[in-house]
Image (cartoon, rainbow, N blue to C red; front, top):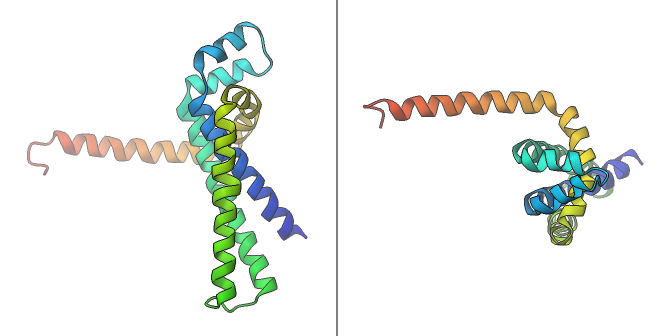
Length: 165
């Protein structure tokens, strides 16, 4: 039962996070500023994330990967429960194909298409979720930021050396 719960919750959060990614990128910044001036609930937080899109996207992308891992682990556990250990059977190939199609259409394409049209309202709704995940994933975000800044600084220095080719 816990495996089913993990499977469906991870699929739900993947759909929410893929939709949130599209909503934050597609949101009309002027319209969100108008929402903030009109004191619409959540507009201040939404504007913060839209102005600092890198923070929102980093949190969303980390969340997508975490829930994709949970989905894959849950799927594998369900697969072993129903089909067994035969990983190279027709059932295995069909099961993996169906799971991939469910993720691609159910958690990626359909939410992105729906939420692109409702981007400003979706950003108002998703901002508290992104704030929660940004706090939850802050150690991972800080580690990613540190590593990426070190790599960028190394590449920048290497490009300035006259004989670095």
